[in-house]
View 1 (tube, rainbow, N blue to C red):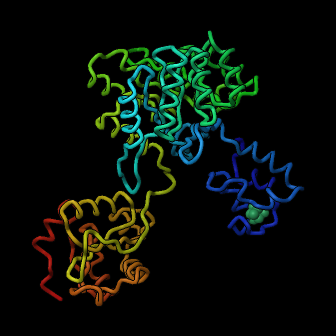
View 2 (view 1 turned 90 degrees about the horizontal axis):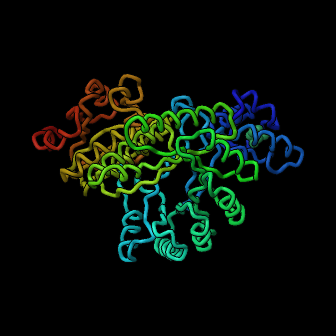
View 3 (view 1 turned 120 degrees about the vertical axis):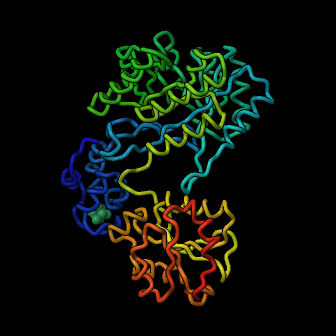
Length: 470
Ligand code: SF4
């Protein structure tokens, strides 16, 4: 993005403060353009009214992210990579999660191929309110046979709608794959110094994104990307090579830093998403566990700095879970705490004799409390208070968790303690003990102070529930 302040964006907006975007002023809208919480097309007059069209085009250009955004695949499962404006996520956020592509190869027998695709497609892990999943299939040509590759690509398409990376250095093999898959908009991998002309022709003919590959040669990488750009090809991904061990791994890491720094600082020839291939670990280690372990280490390193797309091999849960969790953590928006909706939630099958437990709407807190109670088979209600995504201790200190807010959210959920339960009692988290008197006064209810740690709550309930006082 080439704009530094809302004022610079404001100059191009209509300035009528019409409110159609949902903001009361164009200046407020401009500040949301800068933090990318609104899109330019949210200003309907800019889109509809002819006299603004020139300014629209200029502003669109100025708002474009420094790192070009590339979309791979079609439909709901299409993935976007790149599109970032900053080197450090605390300065804004990182926008498009690292896309994780898991390999299949064209010498697999059909049954194993289908089984592996399904494993990749079906994998999901529930974490803090969402399912963590894998993104793509990388189809590798290990036969170097166009027919075999085409048949494998077709089988992948018949089995899943995940986006694909088609992997071969042989243009004839890539063409065979594209003949099957071009309408699925795969990424092709890769153009290098030997095949780039034929690959560039394929990219233009089939209108797909391309990876340019120059292992540990940033000048060549930049020159290849610049050449493709000069030919009008915009959807480019850079692979500077992933060397899995020793000094070369350090060099790989430094290459990623250099590429991204140059891109963010305005070197357009290299301002593209970066690919890393952690599965190169399998070229170094011959036992599965060591290779999976090291592949995961490499994937973690480049999730943090600045891998936008990866090709991986291990689909063992011990490799997938850390990788997914690290990616998810890096790509949460530091400007917005992860929250759940406030309200009264049911765990198990609560009734009028069940406890009512108060917690906050910070997602990590809520899901920890909920899973501690559910895994101990406690039937209960949880009042989730809107604390703006702040955890219990900080919310009590900052005034986001108060007796009035607890009352407000009971009322919003239309949950009347006196009529819905037999004990007219709420249980506050141990870290909110100082609210006890206030909550008793404001709710007119009994208040018990539970454990500070929700892991101990089921044990605490065994000795403290039901309460002696009604
Ligand atoms: S819709 Fe456009 S013109 Fe209207 S207030 Fe928003 S930014 Fe301004």
